[in-house]
Length: 228
Image 1 (cartoon, helix red, strand yellow):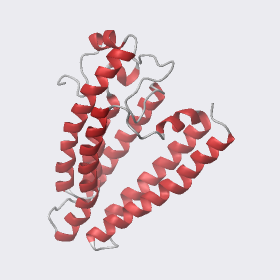
Image 2 (image 1 turned 90 degrees about the vertical axis):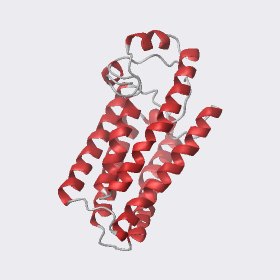
Image 3 (image 1 turned 90 degrees about the horizontal axis):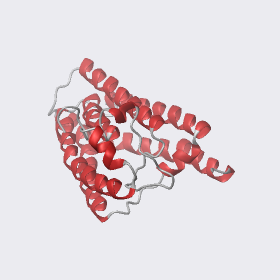
Image 4 (image 1 turned 45 degrees about the vertical axis):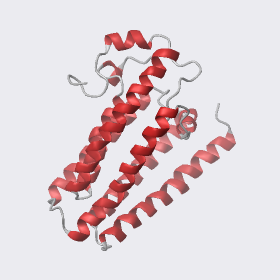
């Protein structure tokens, strides 16, 4: 159970570390673009900050233990550490690319399409919140927690890894909101480390989580309904 010190830690992360990180990210976008008037970067940063603060405050009040567990980043599985390295490389390149795209005029994304990307990004984020509310065992790392049970309701009734499914929408939409076709094209490749991660994750879950193999027999699709 989360104690008073844990709540202080969560609030520090939510109200200090995360806004600071977003400010740095905004600075990277503006510097790469060479234009402080890069309005898409300001729009996306403000939207992410608002979402994170609202959702984080909600979970601190309702389920701080879930947030504490989400703060764990270090993978225990060797295969997952390799996946994280691939994913991190793609993500870091994707962070800089939209600003460079704006600087050199590689893309010409109209304002209405940037706004559409923002709406899709927010929708995908809210879908992830639905996943969190359905499965409080959802973790950043591949593991089976004490007392964990198989979740088969909500989005888990359709695909076995709905949080990863949301990423397939959220990340390209994020790049589109930033006005970068090239960024959107790059993050599509995130599906490759996701596939590798899912294969290893399911091996762990089949071995260590009672009932998971039977769940896989009922829900056939891992990531995209009707495809895989």
